[in-house]
Length: 160
Image (cartoon, rainbow, N blue to C red; front, side):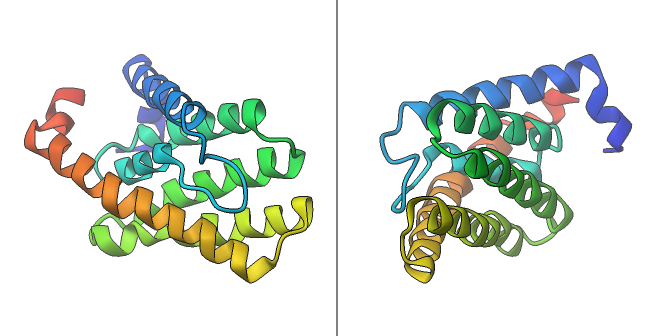
């Protein structure tokens, strides 16, 4: 998909729906924020493997979630950028889904871990580990089955 195709009405509607689902899943989960977190919504970071329109949706959903649920401007900015970088990298590496799905784990583990270290004064490496672990759970345990289910119903052809 070309970048200009992300700005069609249909693509923006898909992105918006993904953003809304991300926000809902984040805000109903009591483990979405803090040093030990597992955002169920981060399972959606597997979507760039098959749905490029999910990239802006994930970023906007994360940004809105962080605007509502985070106490830190650093988290709002850098946590949201971590999800954007992860989504773009996942899309770029999509030929190998297991490697591609490391992108959200690595970006969020490092960036969100750093943000939490500086904003709530928690141990850096421990925090990076817990954020990456929560991300790995969301992406590999929840995201992979989501992908398989979407591929089974051939969602990609229905979104074209």
